Length: 120
Image (cartoon, rainbow, N blue to C red):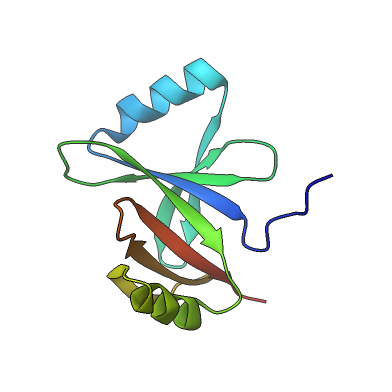
C-alpha cells in the first residue's frame, strides 16, 4: 500500500463565466449536487463531488474556464514563501476567510493551484 500524501488535494473549484450552464452540465453528467451556502456575509456555490473532496463554482469573466485545486497545508504563509523560493509566483497573497486561509500560486512550469489551511 502506497503512503498517503502529506498534502492532499481537498477542494476543487471551477472558475467559469457561465455559472448556470456549468452547474447544469456537471450535475446532469455526474450527478454532482450544487448548493448555495452562506459563507460569512456572502454566499458560495458548493459542488458536492463525493469521496471526501469538496468543490465549488465561482463565476468570473474569462475566455476559458479552469479548475483550481486546493492543496491542504499546515501553514499557508510558510508554504507560499517556499513556493516563491522555488520559482512560483503569488497570484493571491495569503488571506483569511470564514473557514481558513488560502493563497493562489502559479507554478513556474504553468498551472495555478491554491494553498489551503483550515481553521481549527
